[in-house]
Image 1 (cartoon, protein in one colour):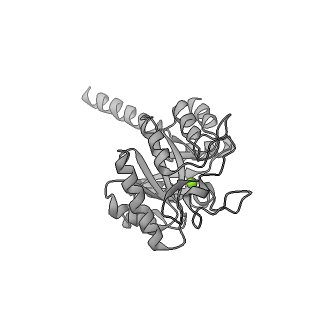
Image 2: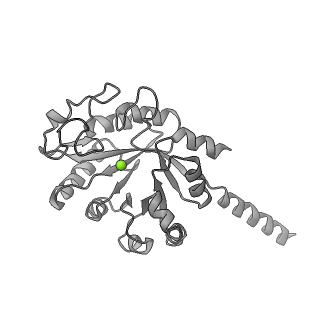
Image 3: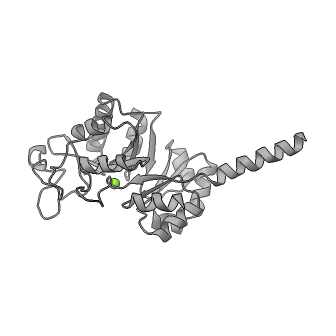
Length: 254
Ligand code: MG
């Protein structure tokens, strides 16, 4: 009888583990929908409105040492450069949905007003390491000011940036993006996990299991087709970052 109960409990447990589904992260916010734009405040609102786990943004440090939210270094169709121009000029840029490029401060104010959605904050690789260290310090200070440290995951392609965040926030969840290091190295660096491109993880599918065995988490970007969503759902990644969060949510419901 006791043995049967234990077996049942084990079966239930393994069932719940197998059923653990990846969490949905909207890449640059939910921007592939009406009235939105990449990295806009609306993109965070829209991500929040569909109940995703998290919404991602990209952050630069301007020439006058301010933090702004945008993806490309040079804004498409202009010569405005996120690193070598000043915040006053950069925030004149009008996004496709009519908003202007937001400062990180404005963005965090919005995030703070929507407590159900995590922020996934990518710090872009900057032109020199000292600027990266400065940007990391400023990002952490701004997160603290808005009481968002616990609700934010930090991600970066630059190992220097990841380690700068680790030093400043030993408890934070920090993930490396560049796809060139095996989970064992990420563990040694004291980071929380890998956040690699679908191409890198398809070349190294064994890294998913290796990461989990080391107590690390796995996020994958940017997964937009159902075929690729299914591939990574089956392999048990912890997070999927996508430009089509509702497509992924529908797939996960099936
Ligand atoms: Mg990004």
